[in-house]
Image 1 (tube, rainbow, N blue to C red):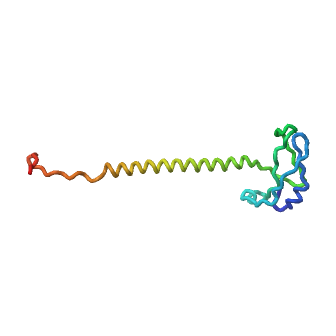
Image 2 (image 1 turned 90 degrees about the vertical axis):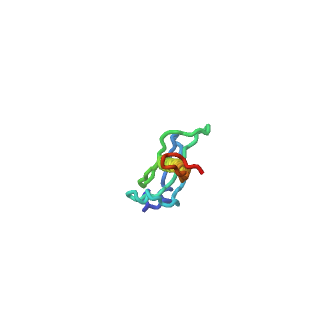
Length: 136
């Protein structure tokens, strides 16, 4: 609902019907703080409630259309889609961590190889001008 409206009053005037035309209650989310997207939305919004999936007589989940109605205009948000963006960001961060770790290991190997292979050369023995070794 709009952030300017009284959330409790709007929630008490809402009705929710499950797929089997059974009445359900929305779980109140009126006390939750406004997130960034809610404040930036035009008009600014606030959370009204959460919808859970109804269970049938055999304790199975009832799939289908749920009807929420009330006197004030309402917006629906798919929290799973929002969560998908967060999961994608976490996976991208994990991938960057793996790449950074591999680059660190490769650079360590190159550093060690350079240290051992590029050390000081062995001292040269003096040679006779004609190409023969001098003996002592």
